[in-house]
Amino acid sequence: MSKVWFITGTSKGFGRVWAEAALERGDRVVATARNADTLTPLVEAYGDLVLPLALDVNDKAAIDAAVKRAHEHFGRLDVVVNNAGYGLFGAIEEITEQQARDQVETNLFGPLWVTQAVLPILREQKSGHIIQVSTIGGVNAFPILGLYHASKWGLEGFTQSLAAEVAGFGIKVTLVEPAGYSTDWRGASGVFADQMPEYDEVRDYRAKLFSGPLAEPGDPEATGPAILELVDADEPPLRTFFGTGTLDMIRAEYEKRLAVWEQWDHLAVAAQGGVKA
Image (cartoon, rainbow, N blue to C red; front, side, top):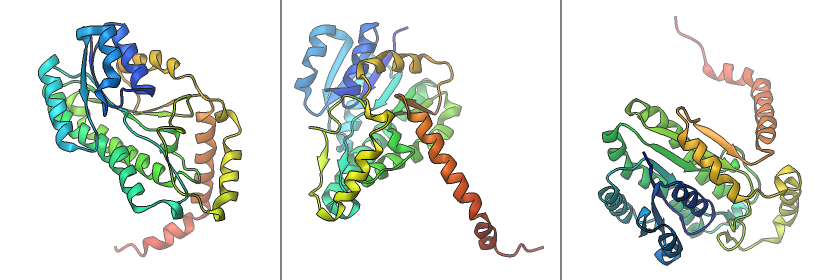
């Protein structure tokens, strides 16, 4: 039986690639974007398999209405993809209050509201798969992306809790953690804080960090077959990377963390205090 997808941020990037991959094999897709006109090519190519909806994920009431309409239109939801989001580039001191609030509203609260809206439907079905689009920066952190990381680490945290909460209802949950891809995440879709010269050396250091294996961007089209394999898996993982070099990076990061925790474990033990008999 074909699956019904609900995808946010379908105008371009991963959302568009995954929508096309699903539609090409005969699945049905509720494609959402802030500007519904960007979805016209999907409707022209795939007709009634697509339900295009205008949606700003910062608007909780609009999310509730879109999910309700999607369910009424197709009768079920099988794959929910929280893809809408963007990067905020700037040192912590450079970020304005509004930039910080907007980043968290879109990247953290947007997926939260969508998740809350679909859960009653998925629980009643006793099935469904929620895909949260995180990033390699959801399990690591780099300079000049602090608030972006904060939003994605928040997404990672509530999603891990969510997975434990809904497993008994037959609902699957996966965090997809891509590395760098040839999308416009670092370009037109990104937001850039006003730069302070005091952080120029930090920016140079960050550039060197990304001069290794992660410097070669991945092909977004290659993620289409990958996402289909993921949603078709009987037991999908809670977390999976997309892109080469990711595993090596995280292995090195966690080795460093473990080494420091072991070095300072005496402090953890001392901070426990005496154990009462």
